[in-house]
Length: 87
Image (cartoon, rainbow, N blue to C red; front, side, top):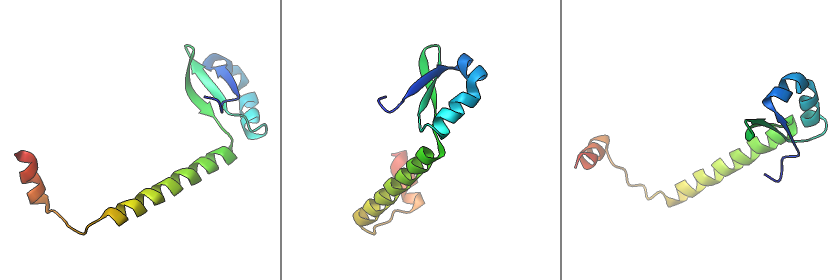
């Protein structure tokens, strides 16, 4: 995880939550939260979150367009699908 710039344990997070939020919001850091030495969550700022949402939306749109381009227009009824799956 090369993009994570800091790490705190869940125990440290309890005492230092305002600091972690500040680091993410104003320092543009991505702070990993660890539990038993393993990363379990990441605190990110709003800008990173919005960029992630935009990326996911763009990917969804691209996948929808690809699916529409591959659609041959042929449909199968629910009954035919159930019959096929039962075989």
